[in-house]
Length: 94
Image (tube, rainbow, N blue to C red; front, side, top):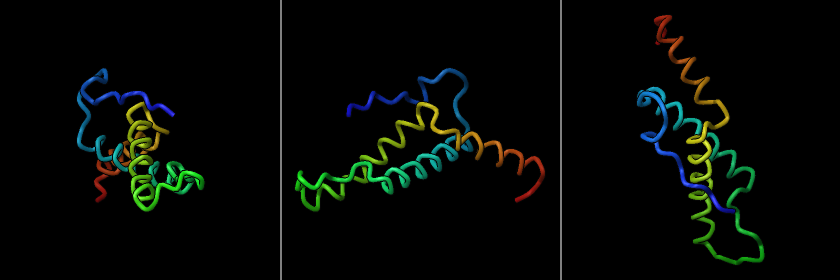
C-alpha cells in the first residue's frame, strides 16, 4: 500500500492552526493509531517472519497512517474536541 505524501500544516489553505487545534489533531491521531493497532494495521503476516524488530516497527506504521489520515481531515474527532473545548472555555469551566 502506498501512502501519498502528507499535506503539511503550512500548505493548508487558511490561517495557521491554533495550539488548541494542534492538540485536538494530536489526540485524534493518537486515537486512530490505537484503533489501527487494535485492528491489526501493520501487524506482520505469519509468513513474513520479520522477527521482533518487525513487531516494534509496526506501531510506527499505525502512527504514520493515523497522522496521514488526520492531515487529510481525519474522521472529524478533532473538530468535535476543538468545539467542545472552545465551548467549555466560553462557559468559564475549567
